[in-house]
Amino acid sequence: MPVSTLLNEHELMRDTKFAARVRAAFIREARVVLEEDPATPGNPLRVALARQVLNPGDWTTPGLAPVIATDSEVAAAAATGSTGTAESAQAAVTDDLILSAVRRAWNVTAGVSPSPAP
Image (cartoon, rainbow, N blue to C red; front, side, top):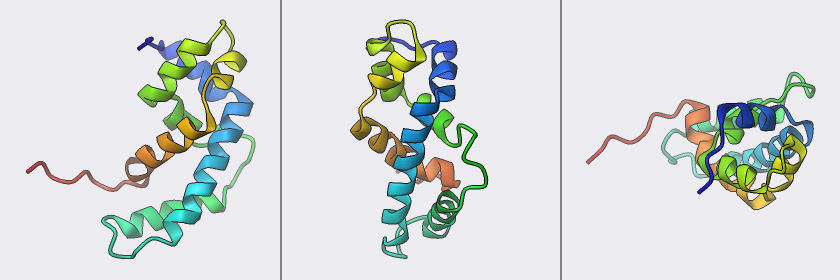
């Protein structure tokens, strides 16, 4: 798996197309979270994040793109597909990979504590 440098990840998270794609993925997942069973662990925090995502304060910032740009699978795909530009790196990351990364990051982004180890 190719290794992405911190500079590569920074360039990816600042790419406006990547940030827009991540924003759309978070919005799509927010709709799912708002319909989940209230008994889901961490539901109040998960729903609070969903409401925040659906009511952004500023569409000009990278938003939650930094969380997704630093996801190991996203960073690896970007590093593999990069030809030295943030545009080529973001184009190498599929929408499905971004959606999967958003799902993996939802609880940590919402502040839901991980389950205790058995």
